[in-house]
Each structure stands twice: as C-alpha cells, then as structure tokens.
Image (cartoon, rainbow, N blue to C red; front, side):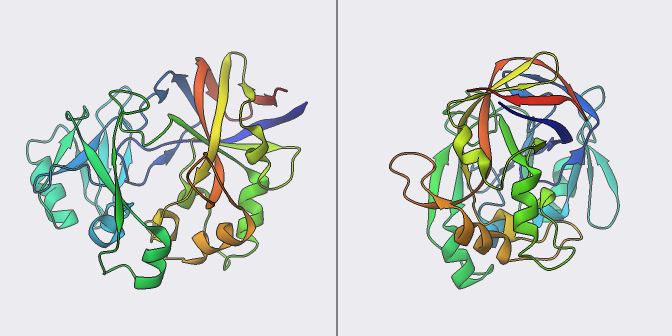
Length: 277
C-alpha cells in the first residue's frame, strides 16, 4: 500500500485567479470549502472568464483571491489594492483591472460555458493571437459548481520535483499547476496515472476516488503573479507524461490527477495519506 502525507493544502476562491495556501480545511462533495466559489462573467459574451483562453484572460492571474469561508472573499489587484467582493464598486474595479466588463457571480448561470484554447496552438502562436478553442459547459459533472471536471485536483511532490528539474530555477510549479492537495508519497514521478479507480484516504475521515490524470491547458505556461511566463511548464509534461487521460481524448500532457469526494472530512498539513488497492 502506498503511503505518505499532505504537505500543502490550497484553494482558489475565484476561478482563474491566484489562490492561497491554507493550513487546514473541510472538504465535502463540492471540494475544499471556499474553493472556486466565485467566478467572473464576461458581460459581453456571457461566458465565464477563464485563463484557459490566454489571449483574452491571462491577466486574471495577476489578481489574487483569498478568504471567503468565514469572511467575504478579498481580491488583491496588481497595484496592491485590496478589494472585498462585497464592495459596491467591485465589478467596476475588476473590469478596469482585466480590461473587459465583468461581473462577479456566485452561482453558475444557466448554460454557462468557457473557452479552452488549444494549448499547443498557444505555444506556437503566442499569447496575443486568438487560436482554436473548445467550448465546454460548466457544472456538467458537478452541477452548480465552477469546476471544469472534478472538485479535487491532487499532485505528488515527486511529480512536481521531476518537472522542476527541467525548468529554470525559481520558475515555480505548485502555483502553476493549481492543485488542492500536494502529497509527499513513496512513489516515483507521475505515479498518479496509476491511481485511477483507486481510493485515497486522507487524514482521519476524508476518502477520495481518483477519476483521471489531469490534462494540462496553457495556464501553467502563463505568468502567475511574480512568476514569469514559462512555456516549458507545458512542454516538459508533454515530453515526460503524454498520455490519454480519458478514452477518446487522445494523448495529452498530464500532471496530477482529478478526484471526487467519497466521504467528507477535515484535512490539515501533515495528515497521513494512503492509496488503496
């Protein structure tokens, strides 16, 4: 049996904005409490704003969202200003920051979609050009949430360390791949591929079922706050772990794995993790 421990726990209160590291959290059917509870809606197109479409929304990753469990979500702008989502002028301030009219929403509008630019086309064309994109509907897997596929994204330190070994010093990995749980386990890099269909027990109560390896979009390549743009953050997984995450998808660069919650529980840094048969 594979064993290990939780070494980081993270949440992103607003979809596609930078998030925060937290020492502990309750995790239920809709994931880490306070994770992806808000999103920005493009007033022009009616779509949910997502950095997966970099030519239009990469600026979202210059904003950081924190809190939102016992107090309102706060958003830090690139100029250092701190806003509360309860501020009367929040939509105006965020629209000015991202360069398009947006509205903060706390529920998925009926039929809401987002666009995911082809990541390899982004690498080839650059960030300023519009490239082919797939449109996907939010909430199709977990109704009422802003998750693209599953409420939990996990990755091992072995996987992150392997990728980091091929990136420039200081390029960053955890922030770029946006996991909820970072696990230190007695495994090799990309062991998460083999966890599909298995259960993870985390801490005293939480049980997760691993659904699929996580295919990567162009987001890891983008600037994340102080972290500069790094195209190798996608090219390295494409070389080292290009697999088919789900039947019919074709080979994709994958990092980490998606999971659903079988039994809720509270998780904290240092909690024990076991991967069942």
